[in-house]
Image (cartoon, rainbow, N blue to C red):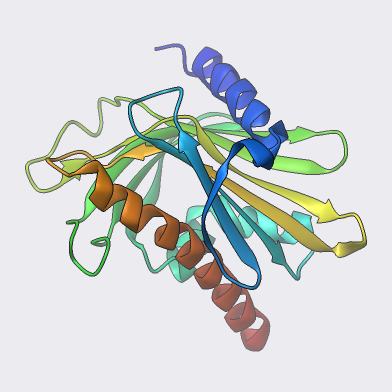
Length: 211
């Protein structure tokens, strides 16, 4: 596989999703500070999700906290293992992740192996762009169901009215594998995205308290 070519293609697709008008999407879950939309995916037979939230920290400080294993592994309660597998270049990496169970145990832990491209755009937009891949160091394991991530990513940009705060956007589309009904996945994923933001904010508060 040409990792760099794949990463370029995924980055273009994720950027296009980020630019879409949310009026074309359906709101499926929301809180006072977090909103989750969905629509049918163009990349597989499942659902594409988009979550947006305001995070009260500058975007350049939030961004590494979101994706680097040394940070993510400390605050993300959905993750039991998250490690760097290979560095392709200074902006392209392969990660391996094992999740905890989803939906109060309705869905067993999953593992993912995925390629990530870090890309920055004019206007201080910082993004991760990811997709599942096969990697020789991580063949299929009988211990976990292998999930697949289709073009997904995180985006951080300064809030126009307050540059010290961040507009955070998550684009997520996953096939959790196994014999799961689509309705089960659709009931779990919006909550998973809200928990991601909530856990991240809690992790940031703890980090500030420890400094």
